[in-house]
Image 1: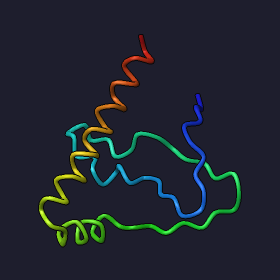
Image 2: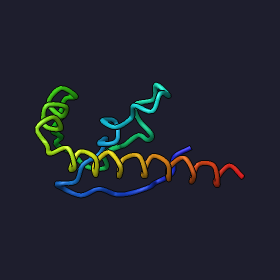
Image 3: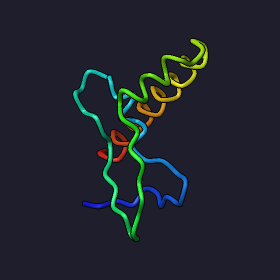
Length: 84
């Protein structure tokens, strides 16, 4: 079924977790999106994102990766709790 998690507004991003989905599961996404109004999107390719990540200071990359891993862990925990 469809569960609304959020309503995004102009300037917000979706799909950012796909860049950090290297958890061995082979999954690249954890949700789907549907536009309610005419929407303009800008795609950031994996190579472009990787190039930007490579240019960051190592400590900043560590922070970004830590946040992504924690969010992925919390998503898994929420799914676990919902199934109980």
